[in-house]
Amino acid sequence: MRFTRVVPVIRTFDTAVADRFYLGFLGMSVDWEHRFEPGLPLYRQVSRDDLVLHLTEHHGDSTPGSVVYVYVTGVRELHAELAARADGSGVRPELESSEGRTEMELVDPFGNRLRFGELDI
Image (cartoon, rainbow, N blue to C red; front, side, top):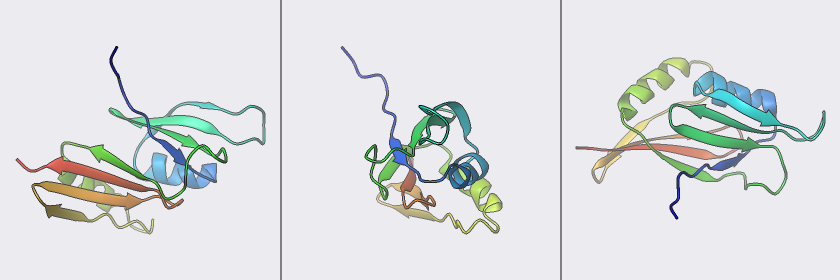
């Protein structure tokens, strides 16, 4: 037996708002989505490279305000990309270095925090 991957489940409340942040700002793509029927909550998978997230509108699936830590190589490049895209979005990505790593934290429109971290070598 072995564990093969972890996929965080993030609570969202509005598909259009989630799309602006996860697809537009972060540059992720929708892999698949599911609704039991029209008008019911959406559950879907989004990804960018090896980062895979499940976004859910279902009550009880996840807690708003959660934190996801993402290990990344090239956090400075990601920061530059997102900072250039941040004009008018209200999101202001900032880099912080301490204890041998550099991190950038983003807060999505639903209060969830995504921390992107890279070990300084």
